Image 1 (cartoon, rainbow, N blue to C red):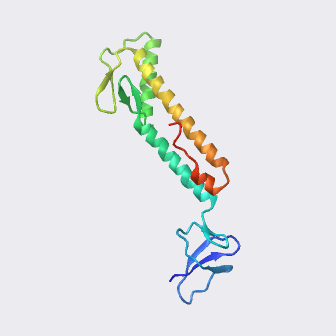
Image 2: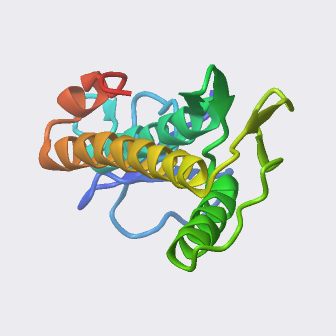
Length: 172
C-alpha cells in the first residue's frame, strides 16, 4: 500500500515517496490516501479546499454559458447562431444596415441571414437586419447577466459544501 504525506503546516498533499527518499520538512504520513492530489488533510480526512471547488464550479458555469450561446436564439421561426464567433458578424451586418438606413442607401432586397439549420431567413430591409442584430445583442447580454449572477453568487460563498451544492442551472 502506498503511503501519502501531507505538509503539517498547510495540510497540502505532498504525494507519496519511494523507499529511502528523504522526506520534505514538515512531512507527515496520512493514514488514508487522497482521491486527488489537490485535497488537503484536515487531521481526520482528505478534504477539498473551497477554492478548488469554487474553481471547478466556475468552470462549469462558463461551460453552461457557452452551451447557452451554442443553443442559439429562436428568431423568425428558426434558430439564430449567437456563439462568440457569430457575434462579430451580427454586429458588422447590423452596423451595415444602420449605415444603409442613415444614408438612405439601397438595402439588397434578396438579403438573407444563414441560420443554424443552414436555411436562410430573408431580411429584405435594413430595419429587418437591425432588428435581428438587436435581438441577438439582447440575448447575449441576458445570458451574460445570468452567468455573472451565478459567478458572483459562487464567489460570495465560503463553505465548500455550499459551493458544490450551488444550482447554476437556473435562469438560462
